[in-house]
Length: 175
Image (cartoon, rainbow, N blue to C red):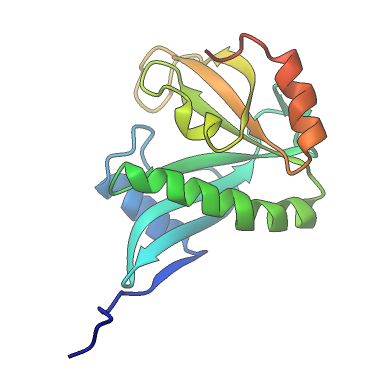
């Protein structure tokens, strides 16, 4: 008998939009599946071959977000897991390994993500080093007809000086 238990492999890798959306639906993501016309980039955390968390990034929908243009930023458009504690793991892996490659390939320096101020405290992004960039309120959701929600726009840049400069400008953007 071995002293070492078998630990199934853990892998963070590119996945298809179909895999991403299947997970978003199965795990009940509030915004549902991703249906943007751009293909974006989807990645998943697998444990023993099974997806347990997903993250996707896309170009910005609007020409600019929190003062950042499409040339300066991409959007982390979905983050979801089958267990809440795995969102933090997926975010860190995405930020540490995927975002730098995307930023280099696209020539951008920022990732932004919208956080529903009612349903989320912001700690997921705050504890990962992201900075609050702005607040926004969306219009009526064309998919559901729901009235827009208050959101905090969080940002990440590999450049600490850029993050610190934006942190100073965004005092009060997120509690």
